[in-house]
Amino acid sequence: MKGLKFDEVVALAQQLVRIPSPNPEGDTAQVASFVRSYLERAGIESEWIEPHPGRVNIVSTLVGRDPGPHIVLNAHLDVFPVETEEGWSDDPLSGVVRDSRLWGRGANDMKAGAAVFIELFRSIAEQGSALCGRLTLMLVCDEESFGEYGSRWLLANRADLAGDVLLSTEPGGLGLVRTAERGMVWAEVKFTGRGGHGAHPVREVNALARARRFMDAVDATVAADGVDAETFLVPHHQQERYDQNMGKGAYDHVRAVTANFGEVTAGVKINMQPAAAMVKVDVRVPPGLSSEERLQRLRDIAADLEGEISVLNFIEPNVTGSELKYVSIFRDIVDNRGGQAAVTGPSPGCSDARLWREMGVPAISYGPYPHGMGGVDEYCELSELEVVAQVHQEFVTKVLLTGGNA
Image (cartoon, rainbow, N blue to C red):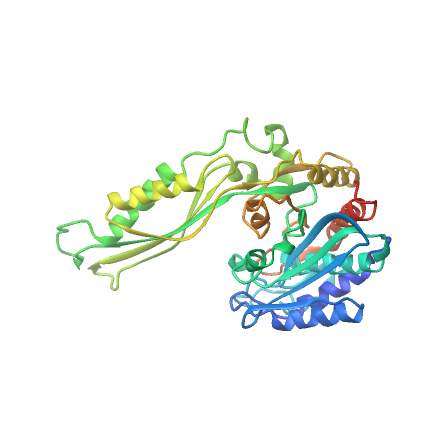
């Protein structure tokens, strides 16, 4: 791989995996210190940006001699925590390479992707005289908790970091160029009742019964529909290929409004009617529908059942148009590498890329398949990672090393 040495990408990814950075707690100081030193040894200066103790972001920008576009390479250094080491084939922080796979927590999400961008940035720095425009490396601290001190903080406080196009190596699959994400409503709803002895006649609906009715109503009215296949961002004839990249059933799942009741608590004793109950619900909304409208449905249902609702997180669906120049360039590169047309569409979850789309900046995510992401024996296929590295390198080369006229 000209310019970018893939063996160095792998070696760097191994080192990153071996440095713990779970979120929570979200402390990235150790891994950020390693990255800063790594860049310094390559002669690259970087900024240490720490909006909150331990929440460290590393930012570096290359400025070409001639004007041109500004590309931002964004990856996060925080990872999901390891709930238990039981079931792991190796130490979760081993970073071992076996069977052409990199194993360990964060191998897939997304320290391998961060290694790709660090090495790509380093290779472009070595060709600095040919650069037309700007290239920013942004390694952030808290994508797993929605970027309060990471990407969101940086964009709110540093307008110079928005750029003209955002690239991300978030895991997804080699045949899918992700240019959109579903919206999200996280809500907590509390219900109360009089309680009483469980063996005695019920004088009024208890709190848990209200919570159950709430969940039934959400399933029936909030998460009861979605976007028609005919009008979905991914054409119906590409359903099979979308599922190949994101998992069986992903196409129908992503174009539907979904509700997950992640937490339900009630009661203190088996023979007592609950006097208080709490439900936390995660509603996802596909592009083409409104998160605000779904939130209002939640509010109405809660009010009908005398519940008290609090909004914990709110995001509208966000889309980068597939017809835009940078998307077309990127998709063509993927098409040429894979030998068949790439699918352009949304991710099932959300990432920091949404923050750029909300600002009107095109955002493209392209990374390896999420093998075991957040689970036991998380790994990254190195053959997939190499393709990801090649695609991002070719895009940056076309846009910034060809006179900025790609």
